[in-house]
Image (cartoon, rainbow, N blue to C red; front, side):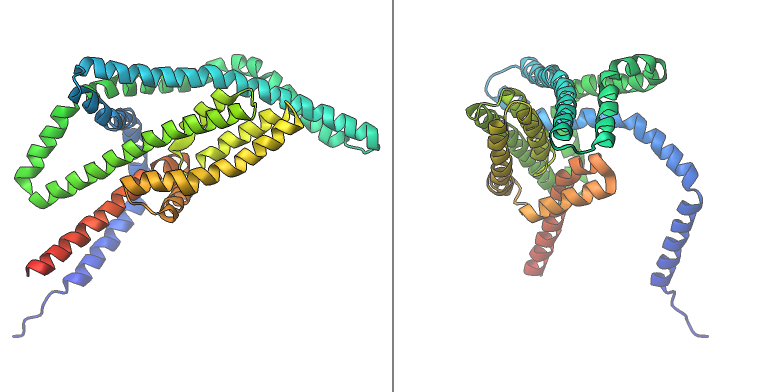
Length: 347
């Protein structure tokens, strides 16, 4: 009687194939439940992310003699003030400048048609319809209020939960971190060191991110002020806020700057165009590589690729999480490679 060994590799392949088939045939079921679970957990994930990002600053203030309650209050007031200022300054500006831009475009087309006897009837009608849509936006929102109330209520509820949850997480972050540290240190030293290295990398990323926000706020505000742009402060705030999208966030700010400059004067438009060409290159090839390169050692090409891949796969959310996820994957690779080298040396 001969003993036949089980081919575990083949068994594993068959099990994986069966698992994929089960997932495909039950996709309607688990996607529905996954969507529901994602909707429930999303505000709490955002709350924890908020607490995790601002914990180093809270810890810094506490280490310098500021009580925890006061440190958290300062952070919350700064965040609320920043968001409120952006909304207060930006929303009316975007609406007014959009209306003015379309009106100026209509006037330009009319003058061009009259002066050179060019039939631009269809283009003019298109802009007129767009102008009417913008001007009737308030009425549209009012008429659609009942149908949108569910969405607005859901967003407001999630925002409130995320906001207050973030405060609670931040106030209790010391206990959360100590609990995780004690749990991992008793289970596996390797896992503990791995999580510790990830935590250190993400802390460096948060510090680098805040540095980038501050630098771009000062940089864009000062430059637009020097060239005489009337909305220099708004553009500076918008530029700093858009740093959440690495390398490409400034493009949106520069588009807004060009549109508003076009309505002021041709000279300001040319100066703004020069700024829109120079500043993103300074940010992309000077500030960002030095900030994130020193804090996380991420190559600019890797960052750009991760942002494109994240956007292609998951849209706006993918763009936002691309860089943190890249840092996590890169650090995971480095950690296990270094761990493997240590085992080879000790062998």
